[in-house]
Length: 161
Image 1 (cartoon, helix red, strand yellow):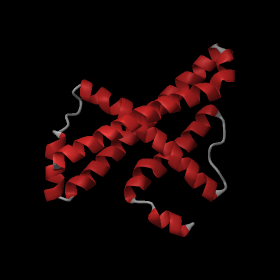
Image 2 (cartoon, rainbow, N blue to C red):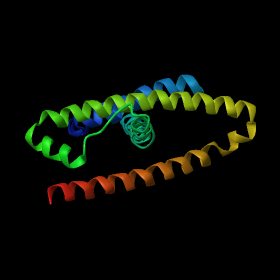
Image 3 (tube, rainbow, N blue to C red):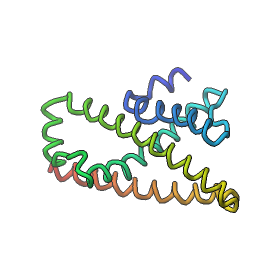
Image 4 (spheres, rainbow, N blue to C red):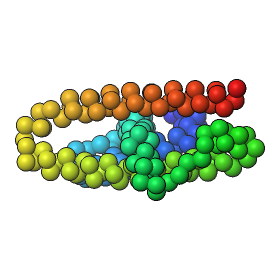
């Protein structure tokens, strides 16, 4: 177990594992379903996955929304790649930036979860569709995440070419 934990980068801890743990605790309080695991091994994987979902939501929903609202402005990707090669602090700053976005995403998802619980109270038929709705939303989210990641790879290749 210690070997596994040693292989997890600081990025993975602050953008996936920590938000996953926080989400499990807060969601458990909200939906009254115990997401916190007593088995550490299983818990680490579950918290990592929850954090991954929270992070992807931030990347696909929160980031574009904040860009559209002109709340944040990104540099040109080629400029980012060039600057990161010259200044190693930019990668660290980008990791911290992503951690803040993931935490904003976590609280946004908590609000959506609370809203869904209220809708489920008004429309009890939703309860039997919980797993299907979740599976469809996760499928869509990870398909768009795949597309976005593929785009970043292509941009990076172009920036270095």
